Amino acid sequence: MKKVAYSVSKRNGVGKLKGIGYLAEDDLFILAFSKEENKPYIKVIEDAGKQCFPNGKDGEFSGTVTELYENVPIYNREKERYETRDCIEVEYSVWYKYVK
Image 1 (cartoon, one colour):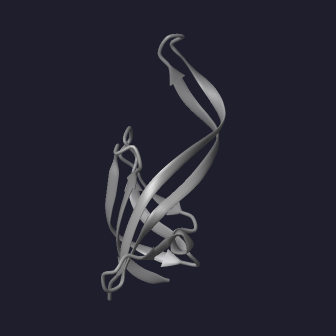
Image 2 (image 1 turned 90 degrees about the horizontal axis):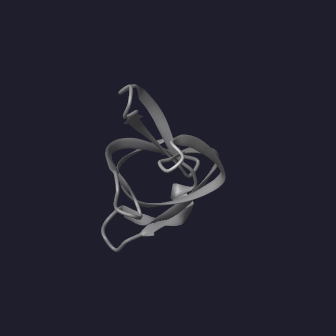
């Protein structure tokens, strides 16, 4: 497990996480907080090490990681209720650099 400084944002530009995390077996582990309850949890960006490549700067890597989420509840404003989507695809822009 290697320590990294990271920046992760959704490709549509909404939301950004940055800080210190860990890269282990090509997965990026980062500490995040839930919006509603402000409780900490560990977010895993799978295969970040495989899908990020050197970006020309010393020890820095960047790339796009696509994750699939299944059975996601989404609020329908017109019907004023939650509906479940079978599958949602989310693209993240990921940057990281190894730190000591």
